[in-house]
Image (cartoon, rainbow, N blue to C red; front, side, top):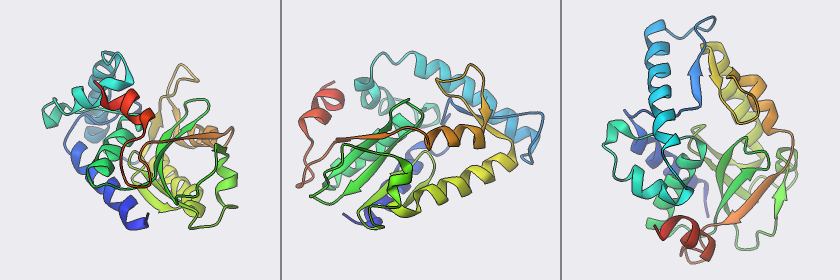
Length: 216
């Protein structure tokens, strides 16, 4: 387990999605923000296309079959899909002790790379600063963040502030319309993050990972 591994998985995932439709839940407001109008329009058009593609995905287990079969420019995904692509690269590289981390209200999903002794079933984001900076490492390709656990909140707040200045907004399952990114990210800080192991101490897939994502 290392910060380098987390950084490498984020980099590979971002390269996988480069030039594609990308997320269906990130879009720009046309009422405010510093992003150029043509960039806003392009992102919002791709957001709608990605949303239609994502709606056609019938189960989480189809992630690899569909995305790996897409032309690169048509790849799509939100935090779950980004995280599972990162996990697949981790599996290929035999990265041990990869866990998927999911907010209890489905606000966000990311990965953590842990020590073999990792014992937490769930934590709050506030808990992350209490477990020790090197207790585990964050791998969050949707946010384009890889860091020590204690830095995670500060790093995603910095990223969210940058997005807010540009006019970026986020769709979630909790409200019907996209909301300013700083309002959305505050939802992540309420409630618990639950963990499920994807690779074991030898970098092999767990039964959960195999049954939910690999046997399709």
